[in-house]
Image: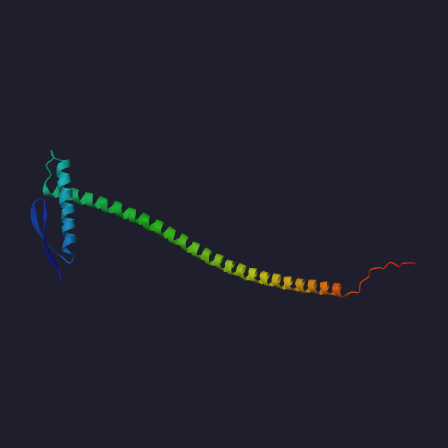
Length: 146
């Protein structure tokens, strides 16, 4: 459903019909009005007919549009570059996480081996100590002569 909106440009009331919101159309009208005011102020001594004024405004608006469009294109290229970098970083992160989990498993295995070694060492140590305690005394006794 088309909206019927009255706007003011150069002091003239203009009725617009559009599917756009009224606030959007008022914003556009204020923009064009400001462009016309700026053009008139910048060229106070020049007398432009309505056609030339319209063409100059159209050229100014087109210039701004193309500059904004070019800036947007540059931003999009930069965004794509950053998105690619993010994808590479995510892949690297996944690889590093896999390596981290592998290293954690290796550490757990090494700890288990160390615990086994310590346990075996302690058992061997205790057995050796027990053997030493159970050996007959080999002290030489002094023979006393009377």
